[in-house]
Image 1: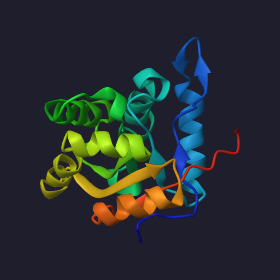
Image 2 (image 1 turned 180 degrees about the horizontal axis):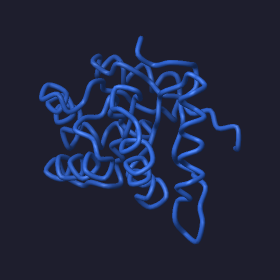
Image 3 (image 1 turned 135 degrees about the vertical axis):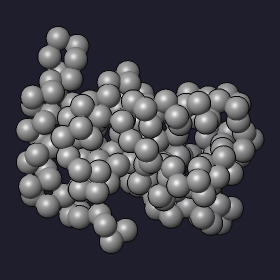
Length: 172
């Protein structure tokens, strides 16, 4: 966690749009301003802006800044896979869309009791753990959307989760 600079992450769920596409000039300016202010953590997910967020990350961040100058988190969303065999192809497509060889954080998305059970049923936790062992993920994390008791249950059962991301969205 020592590599994360600043106290806020740059969430890429809502980006400036022009004619249905990410406004790359404005996004470039936002990224540059954020990095110059001393921050470096960017967060995306496969479903953000129907996949356009990951591509915008590749075009506006990854292609323009050295890989060691930012921290990139992407998410494993339960609604994009049904079986264990679906997870690796999804993950590989995310790496390709973002234009990176690894994610600093791979986040179990929108964790709640219902999704926790699905992740366990399809062996998602062990699959992601293997990706970390292969060096394709630096840290295993989760974004959380449930009760304190549920959080305690998940962290007790899956003790190798290294970070919990809590959303605070000023727009909401």
